[in-house]
Length: 409
Image (cartoon, rainbow, N blue to C red; front, side, top):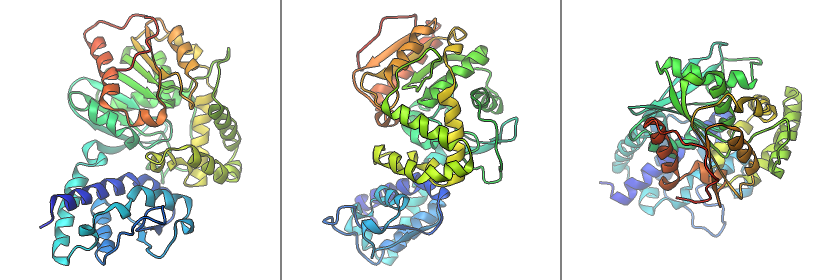
């Protein structure tokens, strides 16, 4: 019988395998993974059962294309193979799992099946719907009660926000969708509408599909821009807004971080044509890899896995980055929480300050520290800020304009 440590290791491996599935979907199989850590001095995960354990875990997870390659060094792997190997962390598996006897392998499948059933795609019922212009939208939903819609960063797998969604689903209904044309879109060819109005309208497609008249909306990074545009377009359908670390553009001007400037310039170039996207994809991927924390790299690098995906991603983001959000502010009268930090080096905090200052019913929550990596893995103390704000709106006590708040919870 598997001991508790071994069972926990199997469940952890299943979670890791499921988390790299979007990345695997975008690259050609087989994908080689190393049974050792990136550090050459780290011990190897050895044992005749390791390959069979990985095979059974990937089968339970519905993931194909991983090939255990014990003879490789870290430098032999391609960029995405290295990211996936780091995520799976096979070297951290206990010896009891790497050398498991055959008679216990069936138990591995049982533990793996249970972990898959509690995984993101299963817990948050996944389905693909169509927008009015025929573009596929991958939608997730779980929970009961008042509806909260979470808009992830443009082009990022929804599972990047799993901590948010699980927290919200404790006592609410939470919905989310992934950016148009980038997920489950193999049968959708050619170009499609990428203007901000169309991207924002996907929110209402999701609400209509679930029969929801109105909802609270939380937007992260580029999702905050979409949330603003949606609230201005159909204010009666959005009860409150919570905008976190948004990357905003103003026709009147607003400071940008160096990262924003570089990103906007490169995406504008790649968005011109598929040929242009192909020419800069590799360089862009290397920049993204060096600036992305390892704990989220397997999600954040998804749009860079192929030239077509990268082209679509750049077109969508270029539209977000170049739309003047100032046009929406006077139209958005819902209670709004605007959150950023003084040291966000990804999206300049001054943009959030301008948004909060231009909205008639907004509160600015300016934290002393925080960045996009910590945002995507927010702990309960930070998530309570969003939940408490929603509770205020539900109690019909909208947050009135208030001085900047530099506290952290």
